[in-house]
Image (cartoon, rainbow over the protein chains, first blue to last red):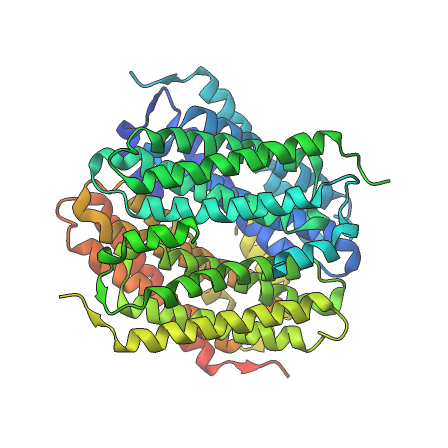
Length: 139
Length: 139
Length: 139
Length: 139
C-alpha cells in the first residue's frame, strides 16, 4: 500500500459524506494520476501541424485530471455537487481525448497508449459518480 | 489591451466553433485568473481548525479555475462537450465556494472578498455557456 | 487596485521575513500570471514539427510561473531558501524560453510577443531576488 | 512497467542531451508524483492555526513537484540550465518541507509520512542533478 492510500484511510472519518467507497476513490486517484502523465507526454511528443487538436485536447485533459486528483486528496473540502460536476467534466474530457487519439493511433503508438489510459480514467470517474449517487451527506 | 487579448484575437480564426464571442471569452479568462489568485490566497490565510472546509474548497476552486483558464487559451483544442462540462464544473465550484466563504465573511474580510471574485467567475462561466449554446461547429 | 493586491496588503504583517518589498512582489505576481497565459497560448498554437522544442519549453515555463505565482500568494509558507531557488528556476526558464522563442519570432508573431512577456517575468524575478537578499528573517 | 515508463523509453531518442539516465529519470518522475500527492493531502488535513507554515509549505511543494514531473515528461523541451535550476528548487523545497513537517510529526502521523516522501523526492532530484552534471548536449 502506498503512502497516499495510507493517508486516505487515516482520513476516511473526515469525509463529509457517508457511504463513500474509499477503494473506488483510491482507484480513481491513481487513474487520474496515470492519465495526467500519459496525456502530458502525448501532448509533448505530437509531431506536426495536423496534430494541433490532439495535442491541445491532451494537455487540457492532463490539467483536468490533476485538478480532479487533488479534489479527491482533500477530504474536508468534498462538496457533493462540486465533486459530481468535476467528475462529469473529467469523464467527458477523457472520453473525447481517447476518441481523438484513436483517430491516428495507427501512426502514433503514443496515442494508442494514451487513449487506453484516458478510457480507464473515464471509467474510474463513472464508477465514482455511480457510487456517490448512493452516498448520503454525513449526519 | 494586454498580450493575452492580442494573442486571442490573432487566433480567433483557429477556433473550431463558429460564433464564439471572443470578448466574452476574454472576460471569462480574466475572471478565472482573478479567482485562482483570490482562492489560493484565501485558502492560504485561513486561521484555525474550523476553517478546514473553506480552505479546501478554496484550493479546489483555484485549481479548477486554472484548468478552465488554460482550456480557453488553447483554441485548437476546443471541443464543445468538454468545454460545456468544464464550464459547468467551474461554475458549480465557484458558487459553492462563494456560499461557504460567506458563512464566515463577518469574521474574515478575505472570505468576503474571495466570495465576490468567485461569484463574478461563476457569472462569467454562465455567460460563456449561454453563448456557446448558440454557437455552431465551424464548417 | 485589484483584489489580489488588497489581500496582499492585508497580509503583509503575516510575512515571515521583514523588509519584503510588497510592491515588487505584486509586480512579480502579475508578471508570472501574464507569462503563464502567454506561454500556454504560445505552446498551444505552435504549428509544425520543427517547433517541438519551443512548444515544450513554453508549456514548462507556464507551469513554473503558475507555481511561482502561487508561492507568492501564500505569505505564511514563505521560506527564504525555497523562494530564492524557485525564483532562480523561474528566471532561468523564462530567459531560456525567450531566447528560444526569438529564434523564430520573424515567422510567428506569437513567439515575439511571448518572448517579451517572458523577459519581463525574468526581470521581475531578478528584482525580487535582489530585494530578498537584503531582507532579514522576521524576529 | 507502467504506461509512462513505456512512453519514456519510446522517446529516449528524442532527449536533447546524451547520457541521460532514463531509469533515474523515471524514478524521479515517480518520486515527484508521490510527493505531490502526499503534500496535497498533508496540506489539506492540517488542523489548527499553528499549522499555517506547514500547510503552505506543503502546498507549495506539491505545486513544484507537479511542475518538475511535467518537465521530465516533455523530452523535447529539456534545456540543461532550466532542468538544473528546477531540480535545485524542487530539492530545496522538499528538504525544507520535510524539516517543517518533522517539527510536529509526533502529533500528526500525516506529517511524519509526508516528510518521508519529501526526503525521497529530494534524494531523487539530487541523483538526477548528479547524473546530468556528467551528461553532454546531444551532438
